[in-house]
Image 1 (tube, rainbow, N blue to C red):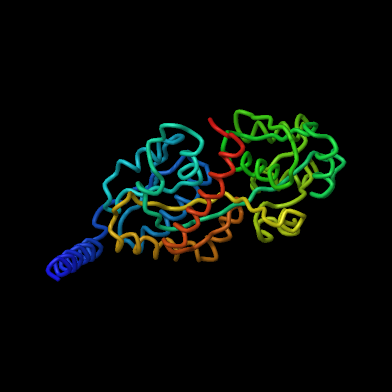
Image 2 (image 1 turned 90 degrees about the vertical axis):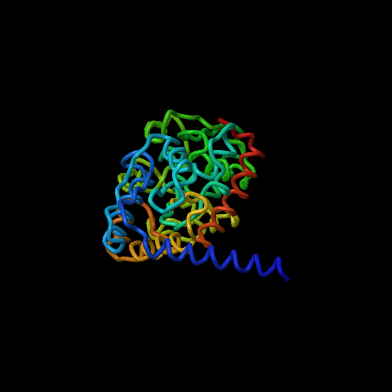
Length: 316
């Protein structure tokens, strides 16, 4: 009984300290670290920063870092709510792809808010005979290793989306890696490769111009970002789903009350009609969610993609 009383007393003290800290928060500038300017991470970070600054009563700035430097800087920050991270799948998938990653996505970060999601589109060059997903799969099965798909960096959303397609469809298509997604898109436009899974923001203008043919979108349900394009799930691959997710994190051990306050303000921003339209215009969809919902989604993504990465032998 004495032990339990001691535990309860300590818990009460911690909760009181947590609440006191949250009531005083924020009393200085808040910094959101994210990836390169113009990236999906950066777009989400800037929209959130602008939207939460006024209700928090403090300036919220965006600090751009190249490559993985953003996550490496955030993991070293004090868990006080003044340094945050807006990042995407690299945060939780890189440890599956590379040895010696400087962070543990579960132990080192506290999910604050799922911000946006963006599916990819399965596109083919217009000269390819396949006009549907079923026809593409049939063609690939009839001619193993005859079809090439273009991709950007190892572990990128367009790379993993293609590997998931390859696995679920039971086909053997060949990856042709490029230095980056723009180079891969140029390759399919010029018919160097026959198919690809670029993001919506890049691919839709080319589809509308007739330079690429869209076969399906990678989200589980039809996407408002790509109206009229069927899903892979409804085109013969019922378990197919692949989307790039982006969200806000705090260093682990940030007080729960502060995490909840930040989540509340971020959700308000993402629920606004003007913000939704702005995000739609750059090919991403807002996803207001609780910290628990975002954490559950990340855990599910790690289980799913970690298994695929291992089975496919993908490694940087």
